[in-house]
Image (cartoon, rainbow, N blue to C red; front, side):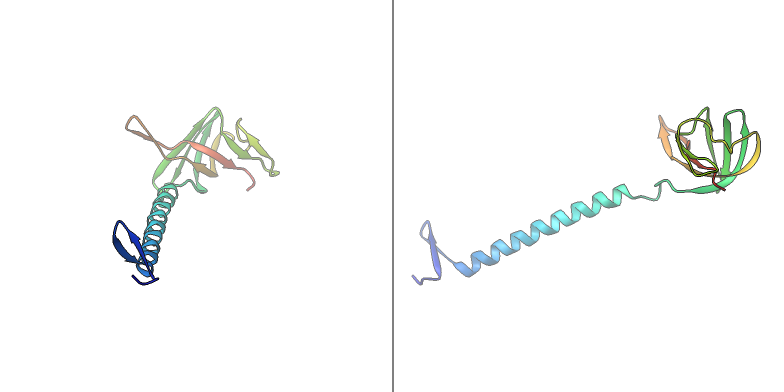
Length: 129
């Protein structure tokens, strides 16, 4: 037997072939991990990711419906996140720019389905103009 061979249960396996097999296994593992990472990233950054929109808002006493791109979005009583006219960030409460009457509103809404019913609550409003 030559020095470039290794015996394993009376079967000679060339060292070079073992190295190629390990390399192929490592590359296969990397490909699988890369595929899993790609699918995880694609699932988390879909087209339904919230973004800023502008629409015509019809405001009552702490209630607003905004029409934008053929959809209606709404909020009552409180908005999770909003910026006032001076740029101060607020968590909860009613945005100061949403006074009764029609207004242009810059907002972010979530796209949710709950028990088969689709809803689009407003989660942020920008009053900075």
